Length: 499
Image (cartoon, rainbow, N blue to C red; front, side, top):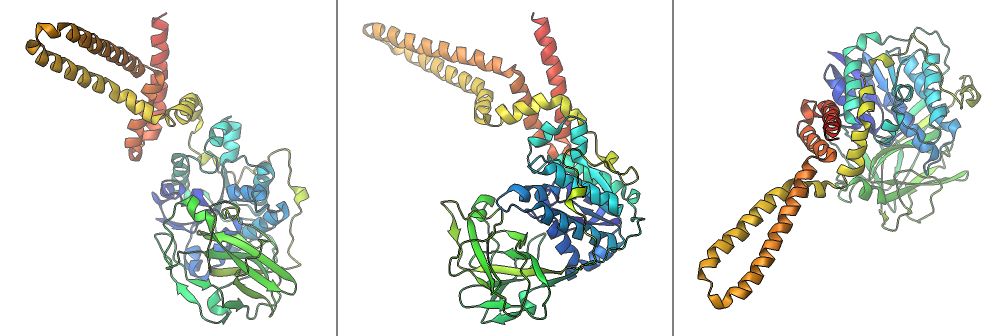
């Protein structure tokens, strides 16, 4: 089997998504991390522990456009210049590796999506990288609204099938034939282990099925400073705030994002305070301070206000919890090269998509998603009606059984009690029987309503979806689309016959 290295955000982390499809036909080293931009992709390419996998890779896949877009308008508010520069650093690094590369552009319509997607397209053309543009596919086939329903995470089945096609056809991705003079900057990853540590530090080793890191805990009374890094700038930081015990948090996503801690970087030229939540995060340091011997890194025990933000650290929420420590993995440094040619934003169109060169366009590997278009009304009904009212639908399914059991119990009680009734009690019995018969009539009416519900289009679709969910691993969701189309056709034919 061929070897693939996967770089990206949460769409590449999803268990049943892109990575699962790739693993059907290739060995996959997944270096993706949720909630991170192209900078994390670059950082992983530079980490020492990843070098063997990168050197052995037959294909490197990268996707970051969704998070690049989000960070341009979220609370982080990255400048377009910063996003574009970091993308150029990433793609230039990929070019110098002399490996086959596949860029994936996922469908997402957040603010600035057109210009940021065009950045990826422009650089793919420039460096000669293979590209699969799912956003453009959705747009050209008029199913972009379908994609918008799922926000930042597309249906896993879509990404999974894209991954499967990439791995099956890995040999169509070629090493770039371009001959380019890059003049790369120098990058360096500095961990607390090779920094000057002032006082004692607790050290932890959080690890799970995907990640294995060494964390140093900054807390009141200790600090860090840099050795032999003059001339470098801090462009990023890797942190993972753990539980007090050093364990990975078991809190759900929202609760993890309101448990935050902040780091403080200080010298005579900068005062940077940034909060991060209980997540494994590689994020930008937007101020990009130049390192000198006086730059001190410490936990923000003075509760200073943030000077910059991370979009998944909600320190402004009323239920925000401040942690008394900050767990640090590494800093990502860069020494710019003035000889490197960096493209200006003026080359990126803001009113139309950049056309991808035909010799690198691999979008034909996208599976036929257009058939979803014909079933959008079913998906709309599922999302807008069936799911929020799932309890009502369960009641509809169970109601006939409940009615029958109740009716049988009432009649059984009547038959049991009737022979023992005295004539003097006849009047009260008739009144009681009338109440009971009215109750039975009401139940029968409800039963007829329940039978009608079973003939509703929404009910039939709900049953089909339940069946699809039970058989998801056998392609249940794909089969559901065709089943839904069949149900719709039968429903229409029935309506016509009743006219």
